Length: 185
Image 1 (spheres, rainbow, N blue to C red):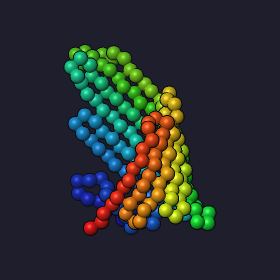
Image 2 (image 1 turned 90 degrees about the horizontal axis):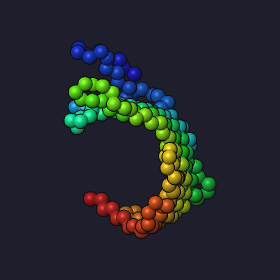
Image 3 (image 1 turned 30 degrees about the horizontal axis):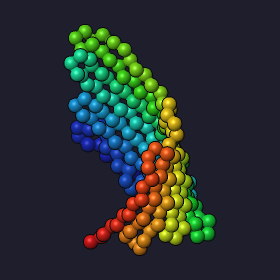
Image 4 (image 1 turned 180 degrees about the vertical axis):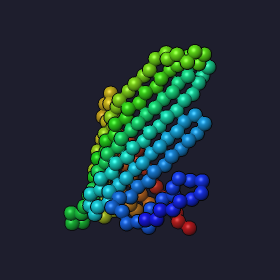
């Protein structure tokens, strides 16, 4: 790990050559009327990989009649795993997120608060998958606070190295059959 100080900056830390037990990334975006800070960490292991993440989003806008200031803070936890049982490769994942958000409406002429709309919500996702030879199977369940659970599933078959035939279905739509072909040149 190298710690360098540059004129005009407080600190510049380079972690690219460090041997750390985790990987991940951080991002920061600032626009004229919004900002987003995000960090994700994965704790690498051979067969089970836990992960955590945090996002802080802020925005403001005005439509002439009302000013709206919004904030949303999300914490995410995840667990990914994979193993092999003979010729079958198994994989699974589980993730959950909790978001606390608020929208504050104010009068543009006086700055007086008109009302606020606070909300706390959760999101959970559980997925499993298996692959044996050219065949694969995936199933997923997603649930948000205040909504019914959604279920998704796919069954696929690789045809050669560049093609895949896949059947997908969910409780929210109609089944689909798709064919993908990729050409490398």
